[in-house]
Image 1 (cartoon, rainbow, N blue to C red):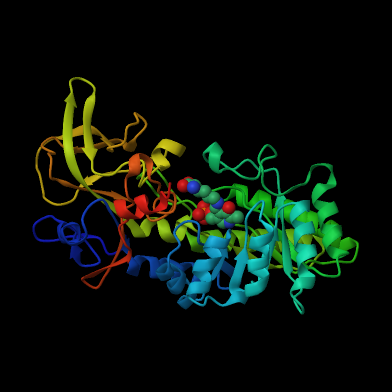
Image 2: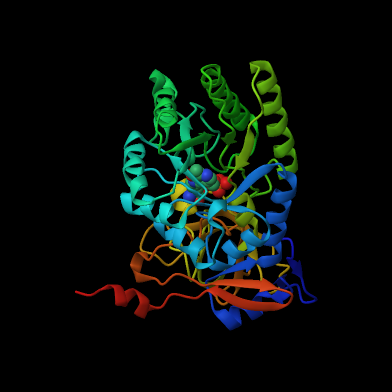
Length: 426
Ligand code: LLP
């Protein structure tokens, strides 16, 4: 987080609050959310992509607070389920600035989107086109503005589970066999729907620009073929996926550079194809929310395995951060509540779940005197940690504590065992 610093005693402070105080007030584990940092990233994307529509991808971390901040920063919002849409509605997010995603959207979800009057619906399949078409007459006066999600056949350089534009995956209309063109013609001929443009999302945690450039080119070629038949689609949405630095080895492309490259590639390609330049959109989630979050844990046990490594067990684990287990993600860890000049040792930070895959930080170093009671901080957990959190072993999910200007405030409270038991009505 941009507001992280060390106080006079070597204690990590975020938003002007020592983490020891955050832990005391709110308990551990806790997701600490640096509100100033989040606002700054919204603003940075808004500014760098000033001539684009910028949809904050709520799946990264959606709460009333983040929806409000994104709205105030002039961003639009990408939601992909009825549940995410409900958060947008709860803060009165302007409907025209909402884009509804999701593969396999249900009739109820599409109806909720039409009812609220969302600005764009990204359609992912022929079945969804049918469902949407059938619903429109129930919402008099509405003419949904549609984007079609296209599988552009680009293999993004990221983990297989989060690469989404090669052929062998579930999303979108394929370029192979003319599927995408068939879908485009169907919407163009559908008097109830308005086709605004094409969409692609090639994957997530992508550090370079080549995949986005390739995707833009393929979409633009397809768009040019359709334009030659008389329909020049006004919009092009290149999705999200911009990576962040989880460890010092990661070198992400910043928003400014990314915007310049995308703008240039699109302008050049359109000139070559002899078509007009479409209005561009992006959907960043991780790059906005990820760096704003730090998870705080308290150490419970330490096992020094001779000649192997030291296992440091904390009071959370794969239920608050499943990314290490699921995507083999890399995180770093630091001793946060005191200074130590003990020599560093190789550690694996593990949790308290009954699972050998319950690893939070696979490999990093901590001072050799790390001991029970110590506070640890794992940075870069603002995206896809609270939103992917689960209750394995009936462990309640941690709170999200917003910090700013020396104050703390829970924006998502800690779950209780009573919350969990309350679901069991048998
Ligand atoms: N737009 C669409 C259509 C998406 O599917 C996604 C993410 C985004 C935008 C935002 O992508 P971002 O900018 O955050 O990379 N759970 C995984 C990430 C899954 C991403 C799914 N879609 C993880 O923890 O790495």
